Amino acid sequence: MKLPDKSTTLEAAVAAIPHGATVLVGGFGVPGTPFALLRELVRQGPRDLVLVKNDANEAGMGVDHLIAAGQVRKLIVTHLGLNANAIAAMNEGRIEVEFCAQGILAERIRAGGAGLGAILTDIGIDTDLAQGKQVVEMEGRPMLVEPALRADVALVHATTADPFGNLAYAATARNFNPLMAMAATQVIAETEALVPLGGLAADAVETPGAFVDQVVELTELSQEYGIVRR
Image (cartoon, rainbow, N blue to C red; front, side, top):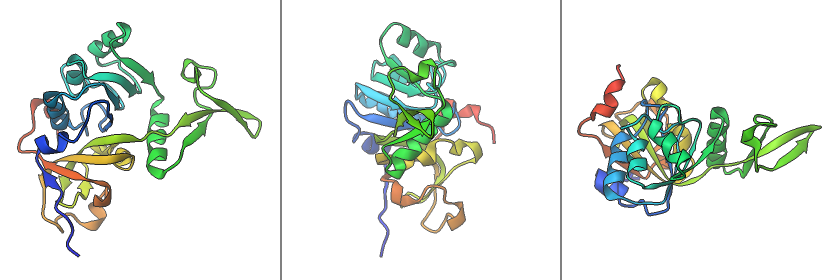
């Protein structure tokens, strides 16, 4: 059986993202963030987006461009501390922000990819993170019910990919990307290098192509990627 070729252009891949979509965005600060896909999302202009990401990048980078363009309705993040623009947008009521402990965010996404409805945790009990959330008792202990996270689209950054969508990441640039690739209806991967089928050793594949719908080869890396030194 011949495997399908999922390689496409930035323009075609992002054109499938509608207004109001919930979008998982890989990355931990700079490493693993799909800056080219985010730039194209700004250019095409879908609005009312819900973004799920570890952070809001720094001012003038990545997610910040979407906030500045007024395309973001809500952020689900672990912190905003590196982006004064995002903090201002939250304080002025221009975006809604849901904060989530970093490990819990990862586990909620993992649960979404595994088909679970929620996880139970005692992390956040008796803190602001518990406000408005359901609490249940398990073995005599109070537990927060944290809903699993799934999305319409996941945007991920890989170092190497093949046309079927098998992906490999560079060290810690892996971060949230593999989890997010399992928790979205449509997965779009940008890659620094596109190799032929068989060009990735089987044990080098960190996200199997079965999870990936479209692959975009980057012809160049913008200055936003330049913070990473390898």
